[in-house]
Length: 300
Image 1 (spheres, rainbow, N blue to C red):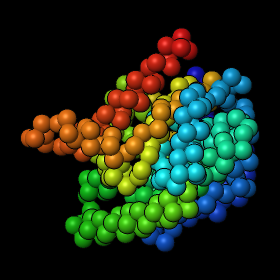
Image 2: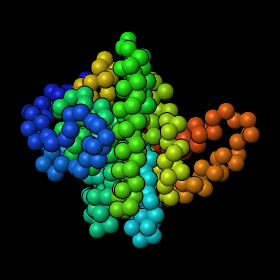
Image 3: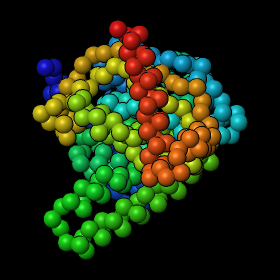
């Protein structure tokens, strides 16, 4: 087994933390965070070392068509992307910049990721890592479920539920502002990194259905290659991830009209379907998996 992120880049993270500006505790006033250029340059150093030179984008014409729909046609844009590691977001931004055209660099600058508050609140080094890129911070449903499972008073649970509602309401307003400014929202529909042997971590979140109702166009992006392998003995410790040099490939689907996509799925369901919203995101995850497997065959 190789070196962990903590072992290989411990000194880098010390420097990162000294430059950190992001909030250590999230409330409704802190849900939109502009990327920190001071920490971003350290992420670029890390990526240069772990991404092999043949890393790149596939379906570049789809990336361009999606960009044009946002910038030239005024459509709101949503990226739904697979999630394996904490370099998924830095990776796609780096490769859009590496592509070198004016539109691809502008595309990279427009991306705003939706991120769980855990990245801010759990560890100062992880917070410094995450704040390199512009984000809208949310209170994930899974986090609230964890709170409800704790042995705390009912009053404390209600207080946390109220906090979650305030944060997520503010986050939705922040995303609306991003749409109006022509920014592109990127969401990991699984809500967590995929852990090998745990298929539940690759299941799409039911809440993603609301994004399909709120956006005009979406781009599905699959990811092949993995530079940060989750340590099975410490899956919850992001800095324990194992650093591996690898070729990363981000593949884009054709542009998809969100509302038509959603309606077509709903129209295909029986009238007594108990959870139609889940079915819409299940189809998104199926397409992403098909894209991933097709590229995996190419790599093989």
